[in-house]
Length: 339
Image (cartoon, rainbow, N blue to C red; front, side, top):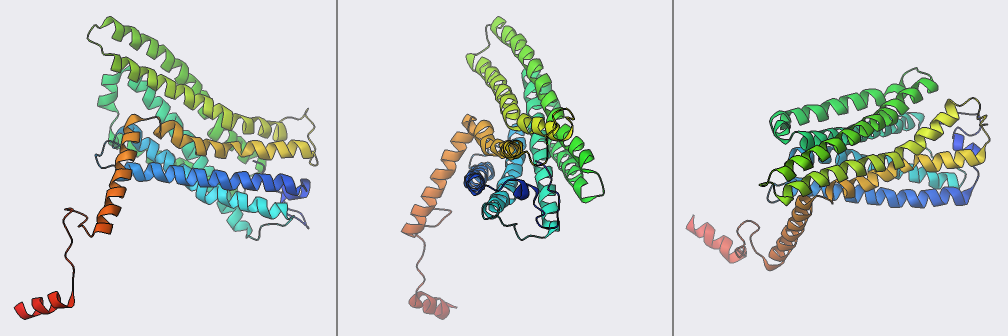
C-alpha cells in the first residue's frame, strides 16, 4: 500500500509505472466482487444481530463481532468500491477525477477501519482466551460496559492514527507507524494469545475430563474457541503479512535495490495490498456464520421477513396477524355521522 507520489504529468504513482489495461481491469473486476461480498455479508450480520427476534445475539462476543462487521462494512462500501473504480480509470490510462483532499480522506478512512478491524480481532482473541482459561473470572470481570469502553477506545485510537497522513510527517514515519500498529503488533499479540490459549485449552480439557459431571458440550465449546483462535491467527497472517513484507522490501531494505520502475515488484505489491480487503470479506463467515446461535437467529429473521410479506399480501395486521380493516368512503361517512 504505497502512497502515491506526484509528478507534473501523472500524479498517480502506479499509473505511471504500470501501463497494463488487462492488469487493471482484472483488479477492478475482483475489487467490485469483493466490495459486493464485503458489503452484503457484513450488512446481513449487522441486521441479524440488530433484528434477532429472540435477542440471543446480545452477548459480549457478539458486540465485538458487530463492531468488526461495521468496520468491514465501511471498508467494502467506502474503500474497496472507490479503489475498484480507480482501477477502471487506470485501465483506461486516466486518473480518477477527485481532489487530493478526497484521496487523503480515503487514506484516513482506510487506516482507521483497518486499525479498528485488527484491534477488534485481537480483542476477540484475548476475550476468547480468558473464556477458556478462567470461565468464572471471565463472567465476573468482562462486562458489557467494559466492552463498550474498549470499542470506544479502539475507535478513538484508530481515528487518531488515521489522520497522520494529513499532518506534516514523512512517508517513512507514517509507514513505520502503520506496519507496527496495524500488522506487526497485532500479529505478535495473536501469536502469544494462540500459544497461551492452546496451553489453557489442554489444562481445561484435563480438568473437565477429571470431573465426571463435565459434559461433552463443555468440552466441545472449549475446542471450538481454540479452533476460532487458530483460524483468526491463520487468516490474519495470510491477509496482512504479505503486505508487511512488501512494505519492508520497498522502504526498509537497502540491499534489495528495488527501483521505481520495477514493474513486476509493483504489480505484486498492488495485488498483495488487496489481500487486506480479502480479510474483510472472510470475517463475517469466520466469526458469525460459525456460531450456531447466529445461524438460528438468521433463520428466524428470514422467517420473520417471509411472514411479514405474506401478512402484507393477505392484508393482515403486522402486530396481531388479524385481518386489517378496509377503509372505504362508506366507513368514513359512517364514522362522521356517529361523531
